[in-house]
Amino acid sequence: MKKFLFSVICTLFTVSAAFAQQVNANTFCESENCECTCACCTKAKEAATAAAAAVANVTRATPSYDNIDNVVDAIIAQYPGQAVFVDFWATWCGPCLMAMKTIEPLKPWMAENNVARVYISLSSSNPAQWKEMVPGIGGNHYVLTKEEESAVVKRYQFNGVPSYQVYNTKGELTFQSTGYRGNEVMKAELEKAM
Image (cartoon, rainbow, N blue to C red; front, side):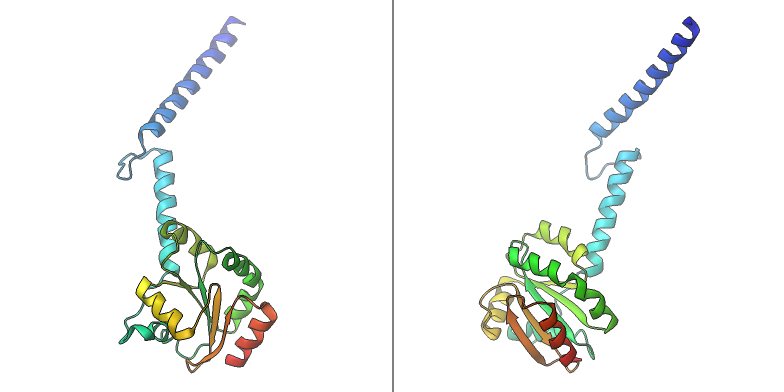
C-alpha cells in the first residue's frame, strides 16, 4: 500500500510541477514580440495571424479617384460586369447589424448570381471592432475617410445608416434606400440590375 501511495504522490507531484511551469510560462509570455514557443504563445500567435489574414481577405484599399465626389464610382468600377450590392454601415449602428443578420439568407443567392457584396463603413466606426467584425460579414469592405464620407452623404443625400445601393452590370445606380426594406425587395432590385 505504501508503494502505491508513494507512486500516486510522485505522479501528482510531477503533474503539478509541469502544470506550475506551464502557468508560470503563460504568466510571463504576454509580450507581442515574445520569442517563446510554449503552447500558449504558439496558439495566441496562430490565432492573431489567422485573424489578420481573415481581415486582409475581405478588406480593400479605397481605389484612387479623380474627384472626391467619385469615391463610390471608383469602388463600383472594381466590379465590372457584375451587379453590385452596397451596404453603408457603421460598427456602432444597431439597425445596421440587425439588417446584416436579416440579409444572411440572401448571401448564397448573391454568390450564385455573381452579385458583388460591398460594405462601406463610415469613418466613425471603431477600428478594432471593425477588424473583428468584417471576417464574419464577408464580402468586400472599405472604410471612408471623414472627407469621403461627407462627399458621399452630400452626393447621394443619405439621411442615416444603414443605407443601401444597387448598381447594375453597367455600373449604373438603379436603387437606393436608407433603412433595410427586406430580403424580397432587395432580391427584386438585384434581379433587375443583373
